[in-house]
Image (cartoon, rainbow, N blue to C red; front, side):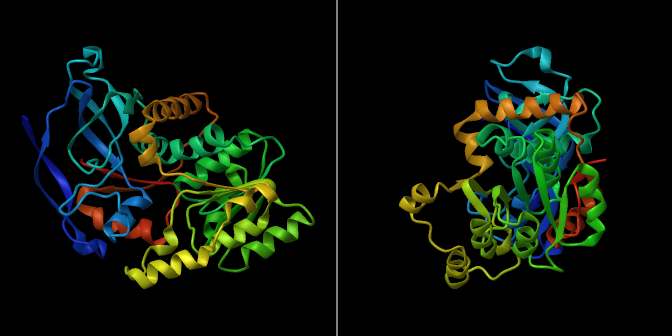
Length: 345
């Protein structure tokens, strides 16, 4: 297979961000028949990258590895089965890892033309807004009057979920960890804001709900939060799990893993039916692998909703590639809001 020389930010070691990465020359494979080659302007960070850096994400490639799920850039070359009219188009694209690279190859279904949309906004649309759209609109649609709880509400997925749920006229409980994030989530439409570092979020939700229960919780934390969410949903309710950030920063080993699982408890299938309650698991990497047409539909939908003004991507911090460690550290700290983007220039 013919190779292309480029630069990449390589994950060379697990652990703290300042010791984990190295910018170096790498080689990537030229695009196959249904692939495109993108000259990358910027790439985005996702919490899965933090998990991979800490050796907590089993889907990640072995070291040395180039992480990264999404890029913005210009299509430079296309495979034999891809329309040559795409050459020169500026796109946002999913990458199955490999996004932390100056040039990236991905499949033609994983792109959407964005023209002059700012890169930081477009990067928010890809993995994070697509994840939110898949959960709240495609997989398990939110309905008018539904009561939903959004964990990590000021983050990339959280800010998208607030907007999508309010678009559908749901009542939103937004869970944050710092009062400085309250104005953002309220501006996006959150009805009740809960700082979980000040109050127990389960108690706070129940105090507003009286005798009612939630319809949906969107949970990227898992661990000890699952039991609380499970107790908060009512008949027809859903706990949608799309991450395990409670594991981040913890020691990796069989005992700590068992502790993490133990905190979630055991859900017995017959109990789901008897109580009409639901648990849904979301891993967008698996959707991309096995249902690529779904990924394409969700990506095009969020781009169109943004053009219509219904969605407004939340731009967080911007970094240069030389600052990749600082970008990772900020995301891991839990102090960031919106999308963190990293630019090559």
